[in-house]
Length: 459
Image (cartoon, rainbow, N blue to C red; front, top):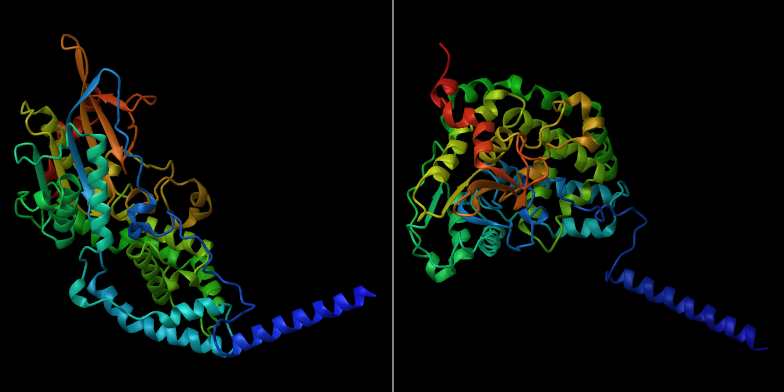
């Protein structure tokens, strides 16, 4: 006799719950949609190209690097500036075009088209442009934190070379003549010395076309034959016009419910906005990221990799050959008999870091990146700018003296993104490479770095 009663009570309970939910929906407290939410897609460290935040790739283990019988003598590094704001051109498009896109997406959704869920629409409705044109390419708060924390970690790893006590005779700092590089350098010194002492650190005046930090600005041959040459972007153009990108356009168009296919310009704007906002805001996801699937990110990332491969990487020999002045500068510092100067720290840009990586022979794929080999490169390529040239990416060399006083040998540790990397020609099983071996491997950089000859325009 009790079972029918219990059954009736359960039915009444569930009926009341349904009524409660309907009332909540009616009053706008929350909404339910059968559409698939794409905002669950993970924004991973292989997706955002040179706009990748450094927190995605940083080595957070700040334990000292210790090699038995070896003592660190000198530290040299090239560090890209931290997370920045976009160029004026992109800021204008964010301010002008994105609100139009947002309103169109919302209207289409209200008409019952598209596959975005209510939560994603709600986040888009909350989004408004925040950037001012005068903020062009300035370092952000996240960029300041990236460099401050990088300075702290390097100091913990190399306390002898990067002491907390500042001395102009121990340190050399240099940045390019840009706000983002200068503020990156100053934030790094806060990580080393604290805010009070960092105010007294001396920096030489930045040079826009610095021959060590931004050598490519002086390389007219590269600027004409590669940087300003439409042929250098041919693989990117082919990929942008190819089936993979057309599939992304079709998928995003369907997801948004648009009647007409989304343009490549709008697709690129969505991607770059997602990238920048991911870098700026560590604790929240950009609503623009939710418009793209994991596969969309992979295709858009590959387009970026193609661009940088042919402009800054292995695509043309002049790209990386011209980086020899930076390598020569490092060897010159290590060869100096002045042991009082312990550390050289340069603050520059992605163009410098990428060309240096290619000069060192790192992340070189057996086959060149092309529009036609995306399926193969999707899983197998090493050249991923998301990982190798994020914001605040860095290359460092540490000189060690190993062995006894009577029988000592100088060796070099190479670090990229704060991790040891092993260069071709050096022992593949060891992190340290003898200075003599290093000199042989890079003899062309040291002895035959004729920058003027390779970079002058041929008559």
